[in-house]
Length: 138
Image (cartoon, rainbow, N blue to C red; front, side, top):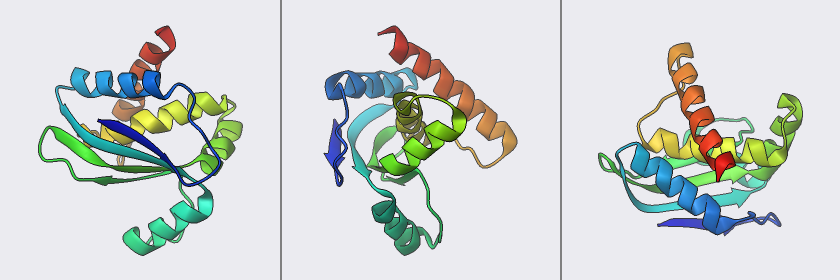
């Protein structure tokens, strides 16, 4: 089950469509969906999590807590809508394009994809683009 939660004034458009898309990504990757909670928040909220749980003294757009067991996916994905807006501006894409990229990025981590090395990041970006294309076709 995909859940959307809000710790700021943001409201996701088309929750049902986005949840179905995330579910299709998980199935396409040969994984089983359990409970995945997306929490949309502001920079301050995510910064506090980053410092407290990861000892990172930086702003970020996404933090995920992965409770998956093998291919059974579950966890909490926190997204700063402020960071997404800034990144969209920096990358010259729409807010929704960047938001959808971050949403799928989080679940792709749960599916086993990494992005710490250049090669892993290239594979992750390719997967993101593939699934973003699927969303735009719906």
